[in-house]
Length: 273
Length: 273
Image (cartoon, rainbow over all chains, first blue to last red; front, side, top):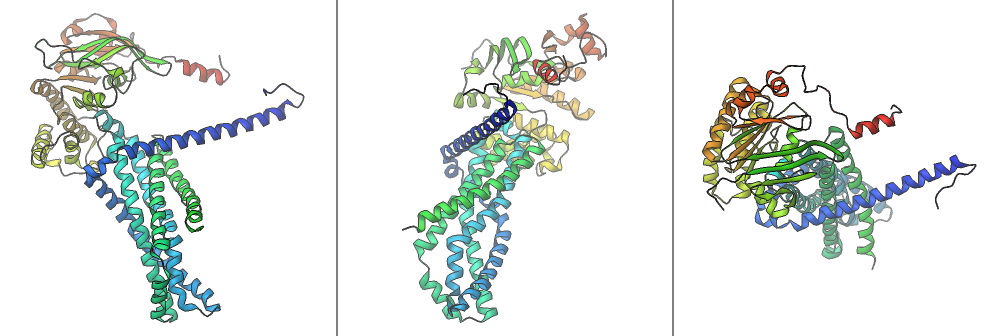
């Protein structure tokens, strides 16, 4: 179906251009996904370094986790406050405000803990990983490593990947825990719900496997995806200031979209029985 | 593997080098023997760094063969390439120090990656090499705290810490003050003798490199213009050689960047013949 010259050739040409642009976008998308999967496979194949040199990964857990702790804690607290207020507003209509503890905890462990933590994680830790790798590339540090017979994927990317995968569920747990305390503060201290009902409803209503474990699985997957996106963006960035700035932006955008999309998929899989 | 007759550590045989369809250097033949200091000289943009990238195996020649330690660099991959690279030390033009490590850890990096020696031995060896470049007392500093000239010397210490058989220096004299410059030149000479290795210098500093080089190759217009011992070149009446050594603005060495197919295409795209 090659375009033949016709009276309305310019319309045809514009159409062809659009199809071509769509095709190019699709090809680039598929090639990008392929390169992304390859980098993931390369990192997995080199994961032995995590056991052989645990200090490298421990440093990254410290760097990624510790530096994100404050923003995660503060955000968790405020999300807990809001859940306490909004939950009370709804539950109060049905006279079941003592179920507030259960509502806050389920919301946090099943959804908000993993998802909001992952979004904050992309913004805080993901961007710094992308910028760090991108600037290492721009400063010829990765090339220098290669010439020194050190594999930068093994030495630089793999410890960072596992650092992110391990740090993320811990951060999500901190987020949920602080959030529960925030809900307790608003519900019990400020509004005056019976503390016994608040805690006992939570205790009897939360299932370790269905609620907590599924939340942990989500946070591990989000940690892996967000960290991998951040590393991929840094690894493939153009070694210029503009390239690094674009890569950090893409880390946040791609990371957030991936987290929200995967969250829907995993929720559907986990809770559809 | 040691042989009594010195076989060349680096051997270029009719090599053409370039990027894409642009050939930077043609018909390059070169041999470097153990114990020699070889200077590759030429104006900026003449392809000196390209030559170095061929030695490290970062660039595969378009024609001819590059042999390092008697191995064809174009055929090496994975583990064997890594083994060859472990036997060379490279000083990058901008230093390429790892900005997340301090001075001490930068120099210790190759030891930690490639050897199993004790922390005490690492400490001794790193301070010893830092002493050699006059920066023992700077071991604790961060990379952001040292000057460009100091960074170059730290990179030199890092390049020699594994006591390689082949040392490659990309512009070792650029950006050094007169005192450091003279010391660095002498250091390259003495290190080469002490380690029994060979050194390849990429430079345009005539005075310092002529003082320490055994063999000088002059690059111009995409090929070797002249080579020989410093005294021979100084006595040469070749207008090329004399222009370069005297630094005269007019002569056979052109000031203008050469024409390339890429430029022709760009020009044609602008609608100009």
